[in-house]
Image (cartoon, rainbow, N blue to C red; front, top):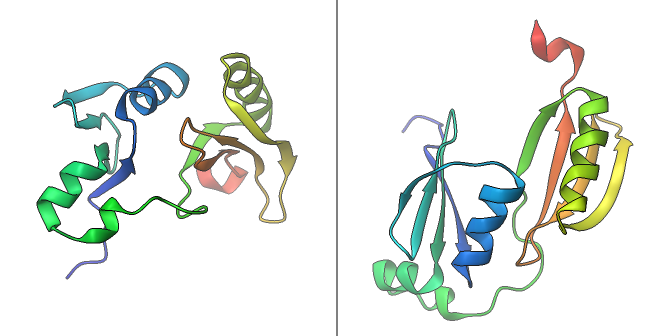
Length: 134
């Protein structure tokens, strides 16, 4: 097996608010919408949303019928410069997104802000480091 992620799927309770969040707030473009499965255009890795019921039907694993508890994953979105982080954070908070933490320089050398999606998953937007462009 080659160590590579080919698809990231966010398992959701309510697909429509999550689809709107990724389209309207984070500017992802839908490339496939099957109603209970939505895939977005994303360079480098496939990215999708899928309902718990579809995953239960596919796997017959009871974990898909249990309510989610706590923070189980985080998506991190690169947005450019440190100033871009500030600007984009203000823009998306202005669209009604739940703020978690305002932009701040982190010990790992990137300006980072934290937000929540409609189901309460916490994600980050972050700046590139100068060496990322070498």
